[in-house]
Length: 66
Image (cartoon, rainbow, N blue to C red; front, side, top):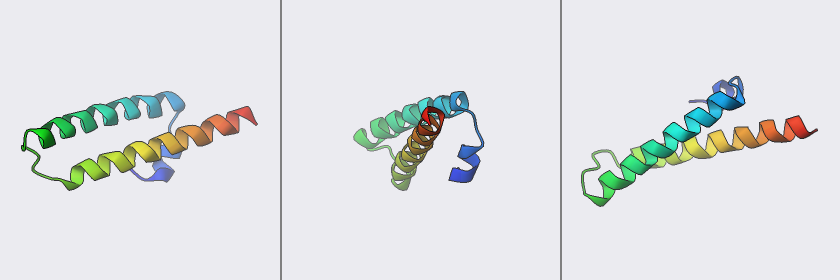
């Protein structure tokens, strides 16, 4: 999901998406450990998605403090 789309979401929605992304990353990690991971690039995409969500959450937090 693009950063512009994420910025339009509320903090609660972003936290929910972050939880889902962490679960997906865990599932991919298990698949990689058991040699069942069909798409290795999916792990990298999920990691970047997590970073993007965390960055926007941090932006919203700093805006609220100002």
